Image 1 (cartoon, chains in turn blue, yellow):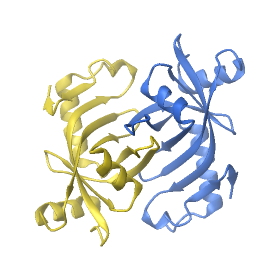
Image 2 (cartoon, one colour):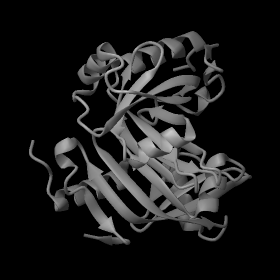
Image 3 (cartoon, one colour):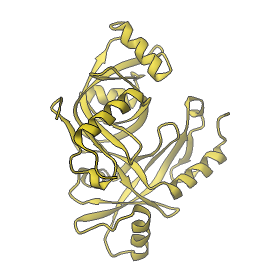
Length: 143
Length: 143
């Protein structure tokens, strides 16, 4: 198969954001110690919502840094998202919380925090021949 | 399906290390900026070998930190590996380099560095019911 066009990749990314349940979340503490876990997410067309224990390394790291690097897989059909992180206080947006629970398959219990990640940069590639042209969003705007 | 036993998980992890081609590599710089990419790897029974450009963020970050957090997927069949990172100077171990090229499907060109990651901690789980009992290796020893 030839490398996908930009518009095809953008359509594939939107489909993956809509249909996938989990993604990989990389984070780091202030000393430069990296961390990596899979988490469930919900995509509402503008931002991703995650929920994880407020005391978890991921929550602490992301709220400290204020931005995140996420990956949807598999490794030969990659979407990399960099975005800004903000806390969504519980109870602020019940509709979004219900949509998250439906997408993720659980309701965050006491002690969890909702994190909203708004993409600034999105890349997508499958094999090495797709590394060129992998940038699909820059500064929050689809290219 | 009931949660897998420890011995079943260890067998599954060894099979994944033997058969998978790529994994996720999280790293961070000294300011606490996280990074995440998929890379191909070779497992020789004792350590993982990666190859990536010496000037890449991943190589710089991993050689600075001296340890790595890796994940094999998919997100519902996770293996998380934490290990120590050492550079393998090119030409030191031609047999290992050939095995890497066969596993990864490419010979690292000029400017690449081989990184050897020796696991200290390994965890594996599929769904939430497998979070208990996910630790399979501690301090470099299979439990």
